[in-house]
Image (cartoon, rainbow, N blue to C red; front, side, top):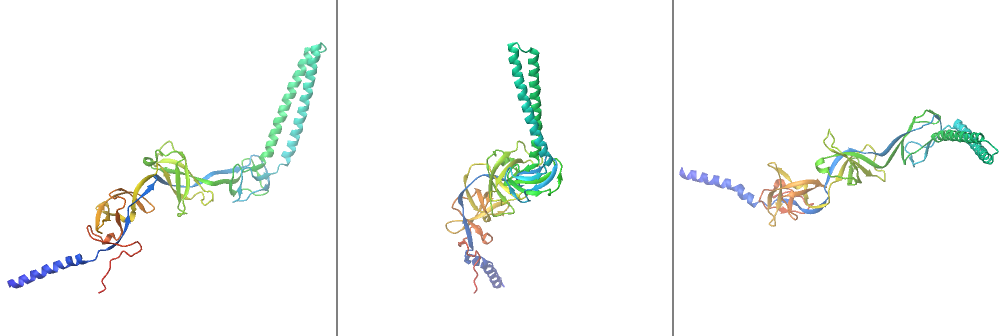
Length: 365
């Protein structure tokens, strides 16, 4: 009986030890590694906002009249000063001719009055005319001068009517909407077209004041438009708000993005990166290397003997898939980037080149 118990104990011991021996004989798991590298990064803060046109204006006529010519269509590009709409100016043109004639007549009357005043003053000096004649001549000159001023003012008003009958583009841009048709009668202030300048676009971005309080006008801005995720657009800060937004507790910053190729449109949403400091050198690692364990961010570092060691780290901002190393790693460290789920702390590993499958080998036998 005692011998049977001893045999049973021996079998149990052998059975319990078998997995350990098998584990010790298992080949090291294959892993991909990433090398911690130094790079230059520029401190920035970001915010999301909607793009708006650099300038947008609803254009209207000042004088009443019937549309006799439409010089533009929706979608057409115009330069500053280009004619957009012409109104009927028949009556205004006649009035302008009459006003010009009145000015010429008033100028002649003033010239005649000045000659008579000069003559009266000369005769009075020689005793051939009285002072009363001189005073009358001077009064006539004053009246003639006032009449000329009135005629000139009326002529300016009439000429302005001719000018107002032609609507011109106040700045270069694109006609995004035309609201009138040929033959329509327009009253003063009637909207005719919407003109938009999209050579650059602007946005009001709300930034975290802890990061953006020292941002100044002229700071570099990079925009990533969600509709064009593979492209980047550059610009600058135009204006920094004087006060924190009461609702969001954020700092409003107005930015301008250059778009010479007209790749963007007002209304698109973009994420804006605003530079807040000078470039600096930082260590970075593939963000996929990190995993969470016991509420800590950790990685596996592979030493020169190909042994993986679990290391607690502190990482910062992620840019293009690489996280800034704040604490826990140094440039040159090799960190497991793929295969972490097969690695234990202190376990030997087999580093494979990128592109090779990081999967455990199996014995088909």
